[in-house]
Image 1 (cartoon, one colour):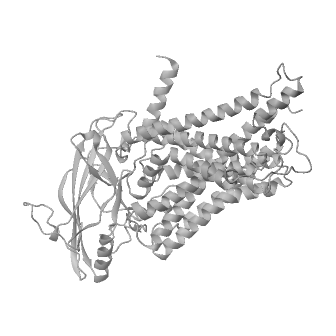
Image 2 (cartoon, rainbow, N blue to C red):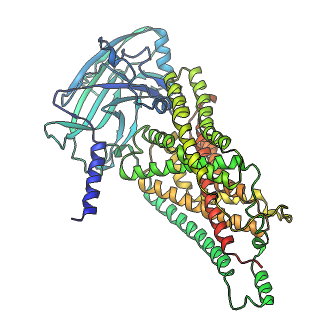
Image 3 (cartoon, rainbow, N blue to C red):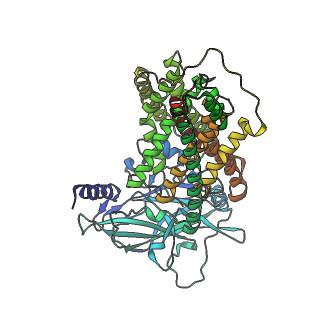
Length: 620
């Protein structure tokens, strides 16, 4: 076995160790944590442990278990509405339970009204066991096709009557630990709810009385059953989170990917032709001493871009704003790239709730140095005079926008007592990370970038700008933006639609191959479209390409935002103004960040090609 192969197997084994769950001994107590109530129709999650109609989350004196269980970056949990509190369910390893009573709760009229309203609004319950969210499973004839949907219904609605699911059956899937076969590790946590009256969870017939929710005082008995089921051993390349991913239609994605590849290859062909014609035409030839031939050769080709060689690198208007946007876009690009690489190698799993958000947030904070570096480099190209002011703007542009969106959503959450509102601890940590980690790293990157030599251009700009001739309607900026955005959007349309389903239907359709391929195709198509349209703009003797390259690159995010709004009206069940505001804030923030990334890709790719063209041009 080669050293490279052994290193790869060692790395995979290391990843598997990281993903492996905790090993438990037989009869060891495993805590179950309450999390939240959430609804795809009403985007206002509620803390489950704070509801008055449930059994209290704790009855002992262990105050250490009453506090919230959270990670160091509590903001991502706040944003998702997670609020983990230990419950009183007694779950011991490999101990099957037929019917245990959790508690008998006396409901007031107010409790019954709240429970009924939540059931009518299709609220789901999310609990966690061994860092796995409880899920409802869909089966077919083969076990490998089992798929999970996070959460289970709080109740049922039949004939406009609400019934509380006061009985749950835990189906816990396990396998022996690799390190010790006497111990087990949990690989699946399924919850099957039911509604039974008077706590009669052991039924002898199909027909039974369900526990109806009426607006009057009564007592409700909550019960539970536990079943343990052994599963086959997972391979090192498998994860217990794989069952939370729903496989989309492979045929649809296959044909969509073929069409996208054809489009990208066509765009690459156009870019190749542009480079060949512009670079080859400017090489010395046997005819360069013949001025008549040179004149004919120039007018044979599109030569407008040659006439503006003294203006093409002229500083843009509002360059002090473009530099921070490009620097922030590079930071996001590095953050997304690192996340995709970690998804490939298994460090980050898209099926784990909040894992992607936590990973992207962490990498974004530590890549602030990249934003400062590239912003400072571009600002120096524009001959800016205050790198300190540019760094301040870079450090507050994107974080300030995210901060504002989170503040709007938190105000909405606070108004409706939702768990989605960011806590005081979350705001405190977010502020510390912004001012004590992100901002100093941005200054460090800006300091390094400012000490580097300025990027020299092949030609120097004159003092007087050249007159730009009038354009036809199809040569205007608006047409370029419309065309530049629709092609990359069409390339990733199918996967973008699956992404919206994952976010707003509770079905995680994304998986590694299609997701990463779509990101790659989006990047390539954005770069190609930006280069092509900017070259046509230069051929029209229009040298205002700095901002246009960025705007054309980010134009696809505008189409994504428009489609997301259409998706909201047609294909979601979201109700209410508040839920609509949350949807728009999330969509606006996501599309805005993606627009910065694609705009940065378009900017740098166009900048590189233009420098290459004008460094090889021979102007008489």
